[in-house]
Image (tube, rainbow, N blue to C red):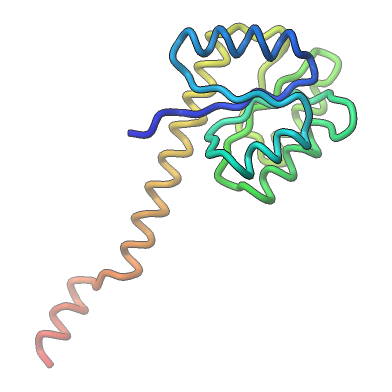
Length: 150
C-alpha cells in the first residue's frame, strides 16, 4: 500500500517547521508551503494525498487555495486549519470540498488521525474508480452467455 504524503500550508513558519518535525518523527512524509501559490506549485510537481491548509493567509487565502486545489487536483484531500475567529471560513471550506477541519492550535495526534481518515477516504475512492473502469471493459455473465450462443 502506498504511504501517505502530506503537505502543510501555512504562512506561520514556526508552525510549519515544528509540525513537520513532529510528523517526520512519526514516519510521515511531509512537504511544506508558506502560501497558496507555493502549495499549488508543489502539487503540480509532487504526488500529495492530504493537504492541511490554513484558512487565514495573506494573498491567496485558504478557501481560494482550496478551490484551486479541487479544480486542478480533485483527488487531493484537504483539511482546513482554522482559528476561532475563522470558523465560518472553515465551514465555507467544507462547502467547497474540504473533507474536515482542525482548530488551532491543533494537537499532532488530531492532525495525524484526521489525515489518516482523509487518506483512507481517498484510497476508497480510488478503488471505486478502478472497479468502475474494470467493469466498463468486462462483460456481464448475460453478455458472455449471449456471445457464446452466437
